[in-house]
Length: 125
Image 1: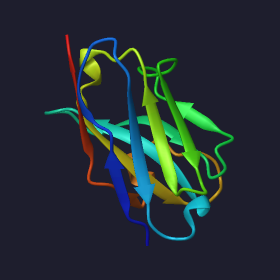
Image 2 (image 1 turned 90 degrees about the vertical axis):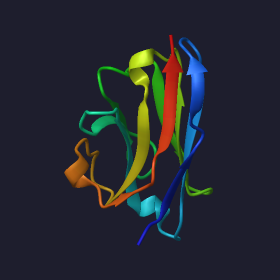
Image 3 (image 1 turned 120 degrees about the vertical axis):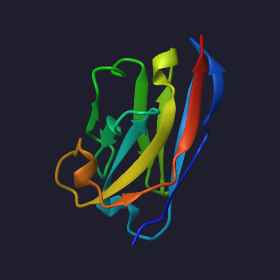
Image 4 (image 1 turned 135 degrees about the horizontal axis):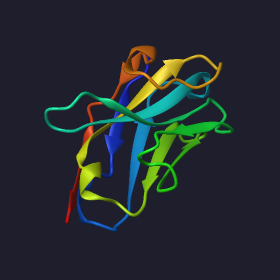
């Protein structure tokens, strides 16, 4: 069982940066691949980024590639999402998710076992 708590969201202007954090409970954090997803009003939850158990492999959606960076600190049981050059279309509730296992990356909602409660990111133009 893993519990996830996101933090770091807020209201920023276009072009700004934010760092989201996701703190995980439990002693087996390094056994989980982690992902970030987002959901805007009236839209489906979409993949943003993923990172494998060691942090050596990452993946990004085309819409955030080059602007967002996912990382993790297994000693702190925390995964991060650094968001730069934010755009109004990045406005959404951002969720972190955990997927048990050390094999590869996952980019769909169905592949993740645990979810945080989400943190709101609002980017004004």
